[in-house]
Length: 293
Image (cartoon, rainbow, N blue to C red; front, side):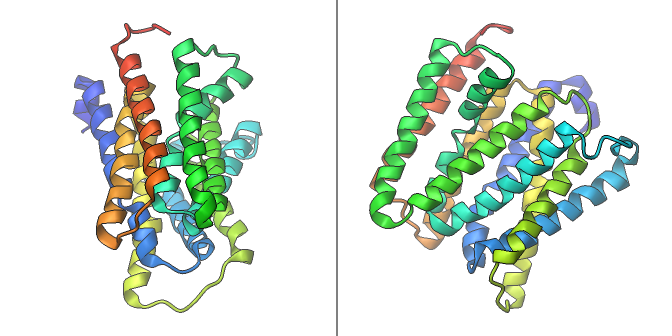
């Protein structure tokens, strides 16, 4: 794989991004199969994923660990805090809304990132992107309108906060250069787990459920997040967005097929608006000459 990254960086980027997405696709289903209180799961996911991140960094890249003064500087604290918020709000979204709604709203993250980049980095937003932003949020409103009658609006709101936290995280990463932020990602995961602890309701679990908790926190979350951190180093952002769109499509379908969780008509309509908009906008960006706006 190292040879491939040097011989064909784009192919390597596609492979690692696709691998990260495919690892993450069953995450929502595994969370549904675990069941119970999702904040209890947030605790275990945070502790397990954070521990795996730190252990991997120490074992394979100890020399890249943050130096004195780099652990809790402004950018470090932002990454830690945003990942803590992201971990809690993702599990809260899965507690209070359908898996389809949570994943579809998550698809707005690239466009929230565009807005945040405009606000904080003074990056311009062209007309096509502005139109896409309007359309994806119209899709969110359609999803929300269907949730009002089913008691899922709170979960949709958590999903939107989650998407915003993820967007802000990626905007922050754009300002860190080649600095290794994996240890901060680890601390953020652990912090999120600890913040969930006072509100979590733990119940005894059997061996099968314990295995699923381990799979969710120690395999799926760190494996997918680690690979998806590598992808953007070798691929343009539009191509990464196109590949990660598979998660938004396949995740809800897997939950629907296995446990029969029907997202509802309005979620399907709103989701179609979001998915089509993201796909068309990404295809447009990929077809543009390198460096075009």
